[in-house]
Image (cartoon, rainbow, N blue to C red; front, side, top):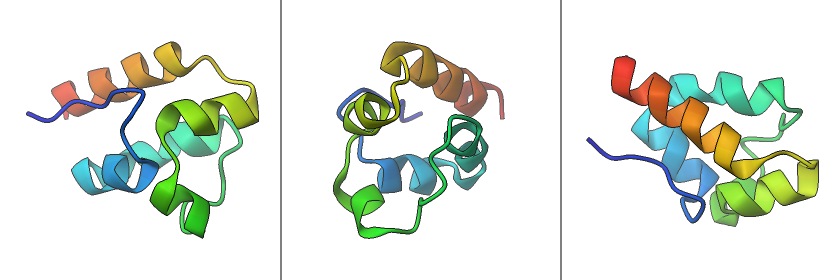
Amino acid sequence: MQLVTKDTIIADVLKINPETAQFFFEIGMHCLGCPSASGETVEQACAVHGVDADALIAKINEYIENN
């Protein structure tokens, strides 16, 4: 099973499990199809949106492990 890290590109997270988009939407990341999502890491996106990257990653990985 592939897990998400701070260095994982957002587009790659969505390839692992498209349903993880809900967690990005919850924190205000609505532009998942834009060019930034194709080259931006989870950590970079969290910094821009003022979100704790570790908390988001834990939530995403827990979801991936259980679904």
